Length: 543
Image 1 (spheres, helix red, strand yellow):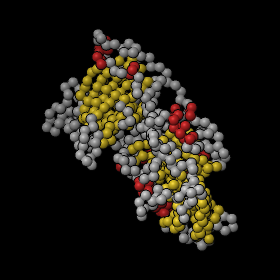
Image 2 (cartoon, rainbow, N blue to C red):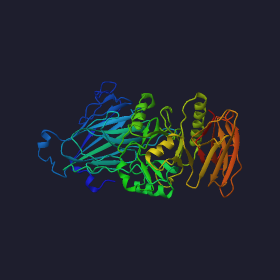
Image 3 (cartoon, helix red, strand yellow):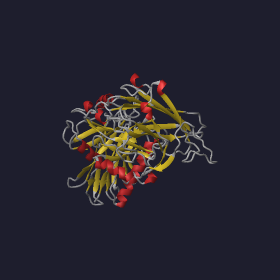
Image 4 (cartoon, one colour):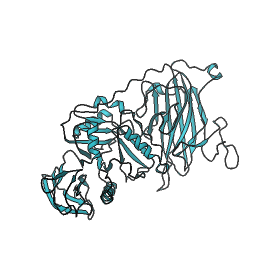
């Protein structure tokens, strides 16, 4: 929350009314009648940003010109000016609505408060949800440099100064020019979305922006070893409730070796992780790019990398931003692809994916669908001779009782570095476990000492005998099974209370193009598979 110095001065408040409902670009309704507020801005324009259509409202102007010299106009350090804009967005509004704000010289701080009505709606109908962010005088161009922060629906107010900003927003000078408050009508009720935005400028010396310090790209590893990580986490810098320090402490308690910062549509957290990294915890930086057609993790990007999210699948822009992630040294990871929340279901296809987040948080039916979909992609890849896409799992933890490291991805990497972890994920040398208690060893062996582990290929002739072995620890009462391109071909006996066991199964490359392992809890519903305790990426068989 903002401190007292960020509250607006009520006697300087001015109000403008904007009604974005049933008007054309000249402020007239379908019958040619002027529906504008007489004291308000008089224009509204629909334009295309290079992707999704967006709406630009009439601008908000602070005192300038003769007004600056008028009696009573106080722009001494610490003085404030406030404007309030009200309007209503109709059902079917564009994804983004921009409110221009003409910012004069000499501003120390920009403070925004917004609210909107949430009327009751009929069952099965979406109610109102309105996101917010801001772009500075460099503009709102897709992928441009003007981005200064986004909080989605997590906050009702924010501020920016040179030396500090609300989490989710980027500190820096408040330069003169036209800024744009970005409103995102996520869902709109049938009767529309009435909103109010109040902008307060505080005048004074701009202050200095501190040079960001970022976490190192290396921690003290164990050489080539299995490292545990959780790459989908949210702090107070988006819609989480934990600080970076609290997340780092919980990650250590969960037995993790690495984590990845993944705030919704902002990189503001990047400079806040360095003090929480250490020899025992590698902290990578990234973003959860949260579009209207699905979410994608930018995993392990260069510090300060921002990836735009203002496009849909129909705009054919995703390839550009997937390249942006890779150019910044990151991995492209579609997140929770079959989640049921509005805008969460993945619509961009998997042609650009480096890894897929198959298991997200507590295991639920949409994870089961994601697992089945991923397995079908494995089948298509071996039959078509195409590259395969590895799977991973993350907690997507936001707040208590969300459990960091539940699940976690266990990666075979050459060392505990950003590059080595990413290489292990990219090659599928990994398995996913419900907690630190679970350990798996999975491999396939052929004649003459040939051997392949998770993510590898056992080079054998089609009819050569292959022995598949799975060693399990930490899964009491769970049931192991072996899955191939034909489906589940082997189910072991339930593990004892010790949670430890070994299963072996024999096959050939002609019979199974790949093998992968699952360890499952007892079914909650008879006839359906139980929730996962762990699963592996595949071992491929044959030449």
